Length: 481
Image (cartoon, rainbow, N blue to C red; front, side, top):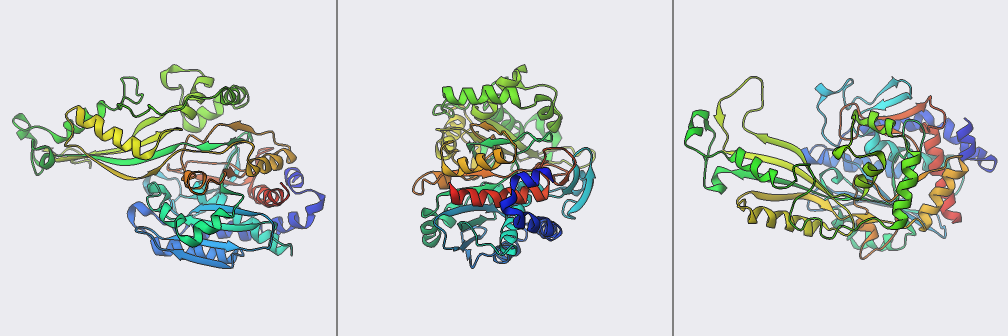
C-alpha cells in the first residue's frame, strides 16, 4: 500500500482507488488473454489472436481499431484521440513461444494463480511475463483512468504484431502502412510495456536492446551431393558420409573454442562502450546483486570465469552466436540405428550497435562458403537491427521521474541483452525514441513455469496494482514532460 500511495499521490487518490477496485477485473482479463495463445511458429490461433487483441484495444478505449494484413500474421493498429497536446506510441506483441506441458508444474495455458514463496502470488502461464502480463497491466491503467472519469492525459497510437517470437519478419509491413506510419510520425516516443524489477525489488532501465537474427542451417545429402538422399541403416555409415556430422563440423567453425563468435567479419561493425556507458556499467555492478542474477538462471559461474562487472559488459556489448536447437534423425525413446540424410540447426545471432541484420546474414553465408560448407543452406526466419535511445529522451526522463517519485532509484543500463523490434521506431524513417516501461517482476520467458507477480510479499517489489498505477503515473508524467 505504501508503494501504491507513493506512485499515485494525494492528487490522484481517485485513480488509486480505481486501480484497487479493478484489480480482479484486470487480472481476469490477463488470464483470458494467456488462455488463448497465438503461436506464430506453429500457425496457431493467428486470426483468433488478432481478433482478441482488437477487442482488448476497443475495451480499453481505443476508438479506431483496424486489422493490418501482412504477408504473414496480421497486425493491429489502433488510435485513441484524447485531444491532448502529446501523443505516445505503444508497441504490443500478442504472440507467445511454444510450451511443452510435460515440463511445467501447471498446464502452460491454464493461467493458474499459484503461491511462489517468497515472492507471493504469481500468474504462471506461457506469455505471463513475455509480454501479456505487462501489456495487460498497461491496458488496466487505461481502464482505471476512464473509470475514474478522468480524461486520458495523452493521445495513444497502438501497433501490435503476432510474430515477435519468430523475429518480427513482417512488422515493417505493419509500420509501413500509410495510416500507421503517419500516426507514428506524430508520436513523441514509443513504449513497450515490460517488467523491470529483480526479485529483491531493484529496478533496471534499459536504453535500448540488442538486435537479432533467427535462422536455420540445413545440411542434406541431396544438397551436399554426399551421404544418403533418404534415411538409411546406420551400417551404411562405413561407406557413406554423414550430413549430420557435416552440419556439426560447420557449426564448430562459427565460434572459438571458448564459445565466442568466430564468423569472419560478423562483428566488424560492433561499437565498443563509451566512457559514459562504462560508467553506467560500473554503477550497475555495484548496485545489482550477482547472487540474485545467478539464482534466477541456476548458474554458478560466468563464461570465461569473468567477474560480475565483466559479465555485465559482455552481456550488453558482445555479439553472440547461439544454437537454439539441433535436430537430426531419431530423437525418441531408445535407439534407432539410422544414418540421417538431413540435419537442422536453429540459430540466433545477437547484434550490438552498429551491426545490422543484413550484414550479419551475409557474413554467415560468406564464412560457411569459404570453409567448404557452401552447400549448407542458411535460411533467415526473422530478426532486426539493434536499437538505442538516449537517456535525455522525454519518454526516458518521464519514466525515471515516476520511479524516483515512487521511492525507487533505478539502475540505468546501456541496453537490454534481449531483443525487440524497437529499431523500426528509432531508425529511418520514423526516428522516434523508444523506451521499455514498467515496474513488476516475472521470469521464465521462453522457459517452463513462466510467471508474473500479481500480489507481492517482498517490500519494494511491485505487484499488479502497483504496476498498473505506475503506468497511470507514467502517462500523466509524459503529458507534463
